[in-house]
Length: 318
Image 1 (cartoon, rainbow, N blue to C red):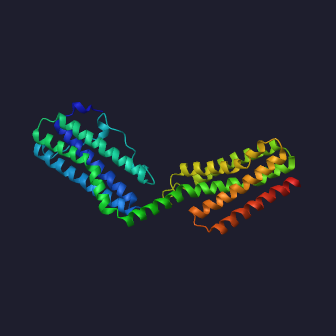
Image 2: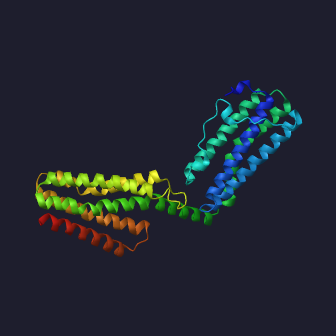
């Protein structure tokens, strides 16, 4: 890697052209990645891409006047001091917050580059262009805001909020709800079977803890390996697996913790109350995020939970 201070004016211009081309393509990738779910924001990014394209054309015109037709390929990774960027194609799916942060970092870094390069330039025309581009990058965020005011109408903002909510439901709520349901319901049978069979709180706690953690690990791997999210848009498999596994374990441990109470009757009473809270919480989540009618959600979840609970009671008393 070369030190930036060792670059000539010709090399600085060549590097600037390469940087603008890379930024242009990044904004194009951003815009394309959001086009289906967030069309208004995609239009804003298209505008930013066009600005970067204009910067590149002006740099090429000046380079041709000063140094001829051949432009050497000098990239950011060839020069010390640049921040390592995560490739856009590896950021799937694109999130608005992550995108805004990366776009902001791009603008700040590019402006700093032009300010530093301008201070080293000796030729008046080169210095003038680099100064101009530094100022334009300084106001790039303002231009993005103007484009947003033009493109992001109240209706499109509402549509994008709905799309963002759908993605949140798809990538976080659904796997978390699946885990919570599995952990809360499937562990009822072994926990209460052990409780009624042994009449010992600690034995029930040990069985419940093992069942909860085991189910959490199993569900985490099952969800993570189900698909990579590239076609379904369900998000990164590791995140989905973590959310599912965590909520599965939480769902099972909730009604297991009461068995730390040494008095068996009190432990059973508290555990039963916790089970009811868990089941109605799941029904509430289904009603809020999945659009399931409240009565239908409560009936489905509570009925299933009661059947599993009774199974554990029958086996424990057998």
